[in-house]
Length: 137
Ligand code: AMP
Ligand code: ZN
Image (cartoon, rainbow, N blue to C red):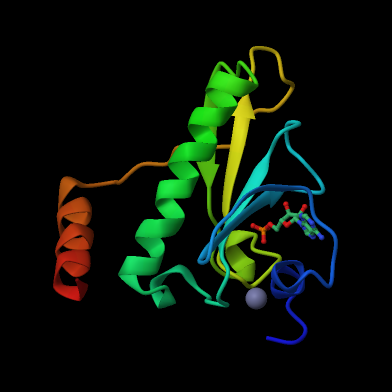
């Protein structure tokens, strides 16, 4: 993908603060961190959205996500870690190359998720949605 900024980072055409690299996976610092140390983990090959990533490739990416989370806990003395991943503009995705945000969290780091917990009017509504999803698997 010629115009993809993450592909440009993979090819070395744009600078990045690399944290980890192997043949399939790259991890680098997010330029606009929610919390300092916020790291992006990507497959080097261009895939989008998440379901397009071959399972074997995704497993390699997730292994690095896990290692980065551990490094944030050990190396940055983070108190916790958030993993975040968006698909589609409606979901807040800006860069259309699959990536996982690995965000170190500290007490009083100033960030809080704007998480609005909703609800279901009837148990039947939940059951119907679960059934719809099961049928689509
Ligand atoms: P998303 O909304 O999940 O698509 O997030 C894209 C992320 O990429 C944002 O958090 C940006 O700060 C980050 N980003 C964009 N350009 C760069 C870049 N050149 N180097 C590092 N991070 C970047
Ligand atoms: Zn790309």
